[in-house]
Amino acid sequence: MIPWVRLDAVELDDGPELRLMQRGSEFSIMLGANELMNSRLSGSEEALARLAAERLEDRPRARMLIGGLGMGFTLRAALAALGADARVTVAELVPEVIAWARGPMAAVFDGCLDDPRVSLFAGDVGQRIGEGAGLWDAILLDVDNGPEGLTRSGNDALYSMAGLTAAFRALTPGGVFSVWSSAPDPAFTRRLRQAGFDVDEVPVRASTRKRGARHMIWVAARPG
Image (tube, rainbow, N blue to C red; front, top):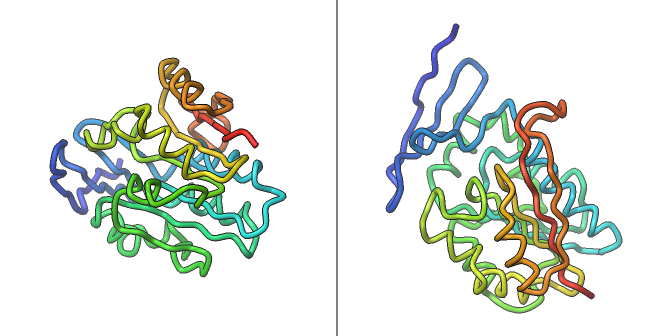
């Protein structure tokens, strides 16, 4: 069997080492002992974008904010589902992840970063959420393994009541706030409802072949 090779690594400020691994044509992003994502498993990340885009079918010039670049699966699915007049901003906090996307994983991204609808923001997605009211038709978060700050303790604020209130305010009426997780979290569902969202919990498979682990996506809509 072909062994895994470490291509690059970065020490996060308040967490374990983030590593990019490769085995043949397969890539893996590891955080300590946890695999955050694998290039063979894109089903739930694609579903995150698809489920949100379905709610925006009738919206011209839809504006979507994606928190977390990852391997680009959510971005590619969003671009496939949205219209030519849509605008998608991707916020990625770790500069090395952006470098990996344009370097060793360029084939995985398949040119999606060069789509004219895409803007890449090298910084905290929370900053973009907090920029003003009614700026976004959809906000998608895939920055951790669930609604807790696994990669960075500062991400906890995104899932707190204050963070959810900020997301609610940043959305247009009827806008969608979607969050990816490796597992259900009833407490997070309750917080979403307390923040004013109408909430659907959608279990999805990790693989596009509807196999593998079950992940959870929250599709939370701002009423109106």
